[in-house]
Every structure is written in C-alpha cells, then in structure tokens.
Length: 226
Image (cartoon, rainbow, N blue to C red; front, side):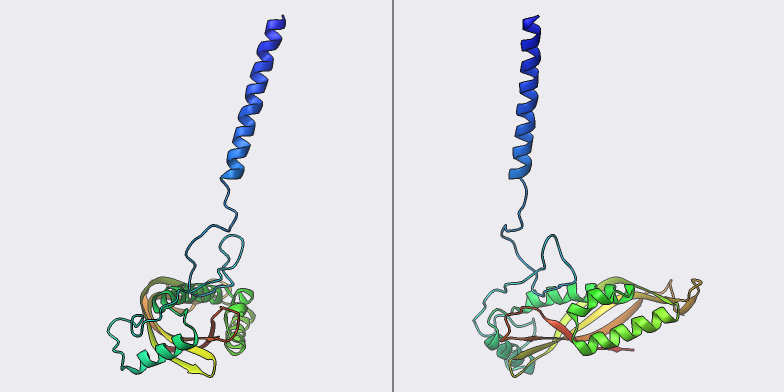
C-alpha cells in the first residue's frame, strides 16, 4: 500500500516539475518590447504595432550626395533641397523616408475610406484634417459609404524637398492602382465602378519641425491628377 502511495507521489512531483518548466519557458521566451530591431522612418501614431507607437531613430548619413534618389544629380534643385534638409536633420534618410511614406499612404487612405477621423487626426495637419473630416461627415449625413480598395502602389518618389525656417517639407508622388466606389444607403453605386481598376497619381506633402523633439511627420497638403 505504501509503495502505491509513493508511486503516486512520484507522478505528482513529476507533473509539478513539468508545469514549472513550462512556466519558466513561457516567461523567458516572452518579448518585452525592448529587443533591438529596425523601426520605420515615418511615425504612424494611428498604427500601433504591439504595445507602443513606432517612434523612429533614423541613421546618420553625412557624406554629400550618398543619400540622393537614383538619377538625381547633385546640382539638381531636389538634391540641393535634400542636402539642406539633411543639414538640419542629419538623421534623415531618403530610402527609409520613402518606405515610411508608403506606409503612411496606406494607413491614411484606409482610415479616410473607413471614415475613421480618430485615426486620421494625429497624422494630419489641422487644415488637412478639417478637409478630410468634412468629407467624412458629409458622406455620413448623406448615408453613403466609400469603398476604396488599394490594389497596389506602383511607384513612390520624392518630387520636392525644402526648408521653411526649421520646418522640413517633403512632397512625395504616389502612383497607385485603386478601385473607388461610393454607395448609397441601399448599397447602390453612386459613383465609381466596382469592377474597374484605375491608376491614380497623388502628391502628398509631409512636414516636420526639425527643432522639435517630436520625430513625427504630418501630412500638410494633398492633390491628385484627375
């Protein structure tokens, strides 16, 4: 009888030990959010990856001309603008900025389509937000919904870079393929074609005060080619 109890005790101890090992592995294997990694260059406060916003520390490139877009000569006005921007903000990197601006395009376009003013507000200047928000409110009051499907982003280029005092401004050209449809409350198509993929060219200008500790860029102007 005692041997039976001892056998049961051994099994219980083994189960407890296995449980503790699993607990330790689960705790030691967790990411605490402080591991190293590469961040995106453009802060998107409306898009929180895991537990915090994507605050960016950009690399320092100090050699003149090494960070220019392909095909841009150092004497080009765009090159001069980028060099002035880099003088004010040595951490600015063209390729990482373009990567981040692509993400910004997707996030802002998606929030605008969904009518998510709360997500848009931290990403836009007050003037651009007021314009976007008005269209969203008008759409809601009319009982309409927007379906803007971003099929692909085919090209992203910096078209202009300039300084206004300590404020850096960068205009980006996006060429994308989209399906744009507006429906009424009954689901009928008011404008657009749900079966047509159209090429859209947008010009967005982002701005940031280089003297501010805030690393975020804000969308301050938009225009499209009809």
